[in-house]
Image (cartoon, rainbow, N blue to C red; front, side, top):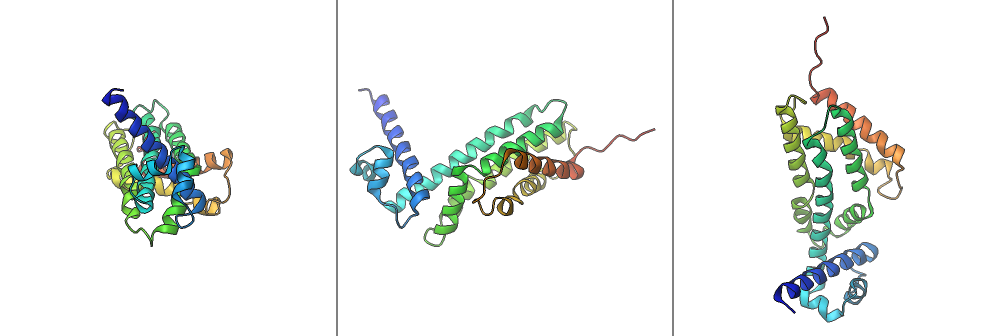
Length: 214
């Protein structure tokens, strides 16, 4: 076996362990989860888990980081359409908002928030872990897209960072109440309506000035 193949296999095994760990921690919570159950979920032997990640606490923090990074990467993909939004910017923004809301309410994101809330006292450092791979990075990427749209005359977002922050607040602000803290599944029509309302409000503030009528 070549060193490249061996290295790839080790990476794949580590990823399987982290994914399995996150699944078990999300289902059981940190205190109730056991390494053997994580090994079973990942399809590896228990010693293999310890070989890759030395103890349960390290496993938890790495699993949280991996889940947050995956969620971030999925969200960044949704912003790509803003690079070339076509003639109908409001519809493109609404579609982006809808996709972001759907990702914000998927199983991984809901589990990540529950684990953050329940384990923050035990692991205060996970707040920084999630921030580094979460809202801050997403807002920066969104601000960059909005700045480029402003330069193209499609928006008047003189402060793209603030504009990005406000758009995300408009999108996610109603979610906790609407979803009853993640215990209620929102249907597509409701999520689409939330994206539409957020986009319309955002464009009233940051949209281009309407041309003067003669």
